[in-house]
Image 1: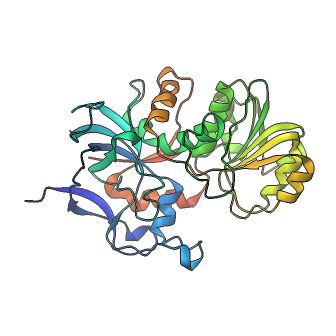
Image 2: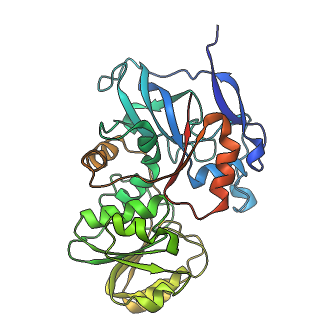
Length: 338
């Protein structure tokens, strides 16, 4: 008899109301997997894009999947079962992960559920110094900051450019982080600071006190002054926002510097960057349990902390998605399983 669980599933693409909290089969695991009893799962932009059917993409790139789907990639929980080839995790271990990303980008990695199947290679022990809510909030945002700024950690082809992304040394360098109040941004500020950089954070004024507390050396309220008018001779700009006019940051960067784009779609400044001798680079974040273990040490000792915008019960996923779509998020939104 199939074991059941509660999960948030979609049976069609659309707005937050297509998220339904209902019974679903508990996942089976392979020899290389771990079954995790989910305590918390966080919301990331790809969850919103998939729920909506990736309508912003050209039609030929949009998913055409069999429903129902279970969204979500970031989890924290406890090991409930291990595959026969798994020796590094045991029943009862507290763990966290970004699950099968980007492999399940178009199908959902099934984190909005009571149980989730996780490849052992995606998994790490949860830092003991933080709780499951904080741990669930970390993986995608923390791995994005880590792979952009510290270590790429893989040799998979780069879907956005012909060359692999390469982090640059940051000790004693000036780093500007645009979108510093969001999930990736507030962690990037701290990771860059941990590496010895002078960090200038760009966000709306509501985030100034928080970002100063997290270690930012300078703050720019973009609602009052444009960053490109307030900064010159930065060594690196990390843009965690994307959208129109990303090339405006080129004027803030010294020759030989770099512009890292978390969401590069729409960037049109490659010729100008070449004239200015600025490297423009991006990458696709990928699941990596070893990197989560490495970065988790910073969560454990307090060098980096995850800010929680708000929490919702798993059954309240539609409300959580509405909050995520409302904008002006400070940190991460987390779903808490029962």
